[in-house]
Amino acid sequence: MTFALSRWARSLGMALGLGSLASCGTPPAPVSPGREPPAVAPPDADSGVRFATVELATLPGTVALHDPGRWRATSDGSFTVLEHAPSRSTLTLRVWRSARLVRPEECEAEARLARPALPRPDPEALVDLRELEAPRGFSGSLAVGVEPDPNGTHGFVLGIGAAVGRCFVFAFDTTADGANAVTTVAHRLRAAADQIAPSVTLRDVDERVRPERVLQ
Image 1 (tube, rainbow, N blue to C red):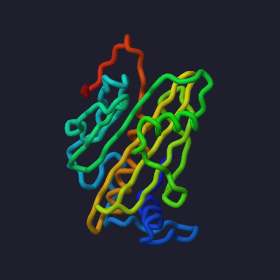
Image 2 (cartoon, rainbow, N blue to C red):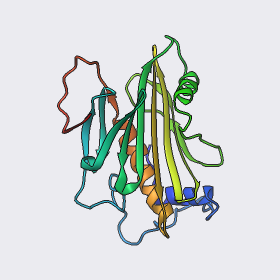
Image 3 (cartoon, rainbow, N blue to C red):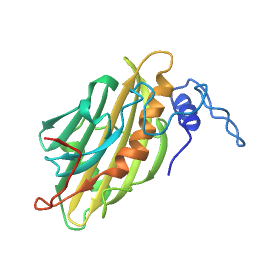
Image 4 (spheres, rainbow, N blue to C red):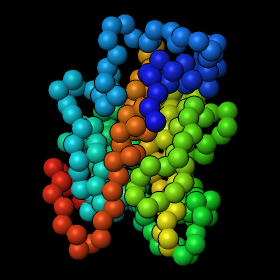
């Protein structure tokens, strides 16, 4: 499921108290003049930079990232954390074993015990809520939200999934400031929800993959 950028920006503005949703009918023109950029390219990114599939050795698995050369992987306990300094964005991932018939709610509770700083989707901050598409075999939800931040506008995408005997968490955070902060965050959240989250694949340790890049 994808949403037009103009709807994302309006929804974010409403959640922040900066505007309101238009009434039902034909959506207004996008906030930015001219042709709307493709979903895969945040507006503050280099136009020549692209998405590429990278391998996450600590997951293990793969994910498609925009501007892959400038993401830096770190390990924070059992979580894989990727940081993109130019856009002030962070992607946190974890997959772990749990009870055989575990539910997404139980996976979320376990994840928050291990990482209390995970985004907490407040109903008033949500701009989108959909079913989790990936990884394959997991069921759960993907929440998109935005909230005021001392350093500008903060947005997040939080995915929680459960499979037979396993749990998965996907958390994307980003912050922007300035006059175009809401639109900038809308671009990034749309890319994270529509491009990055659905691209996650998990693999067994003995599987062979040929990613374009490897982030240890």
